[in-house]
Length: 223
Image (tube, rainbow, N blue to C red; front, side, top):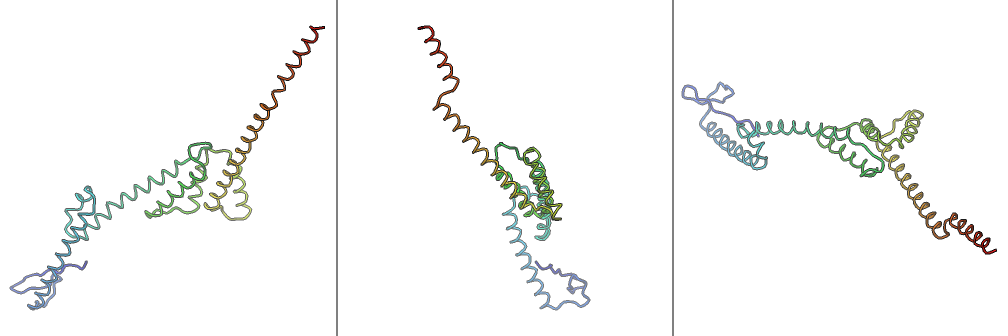
């Protein structure tokens, strides 16, 4: 919105508030008065729009500001501080996020949640570097020692190639490792079920031996 031009009366003549030396003509005065009236109408409209869209807490903080520009600056200050607090909270969530093997969430969900937090940080103007995000992912796996060999392999590969492992590559490897572990676990469970089923179908060898001994004793008695 344009700056409001005020009229200053001095010795019966009107001047611009910018200390113009030449007095204003009647046409200039009328033109400025019309501009002032239009400006005040637009100011009132903007005030009304802002007051009707902000929450009660923000309204009480900005209602005393004289112009729409001042109100906007105040709102930026209010939400800027909230944004900083929100960013700090998101970083704390990343730092405290830990993957637990056989926990409530699987690897894919765990990593997806971390990516969502990273995206929120970017949205509020607090983007993380890829190296920092990869470090957060690494830290989140501290309670899952079975993945330590994978990190060792990736670190060795990075040293050999001279290129650090990106967060995207790290996520891919962790998901692949988790999928492989899940498949092996399912296969082992299936093998155990098959062994138990086969044992039940054929009978326990110990039972067969006991039955054989019992029959032998009965034959000896009959003799």
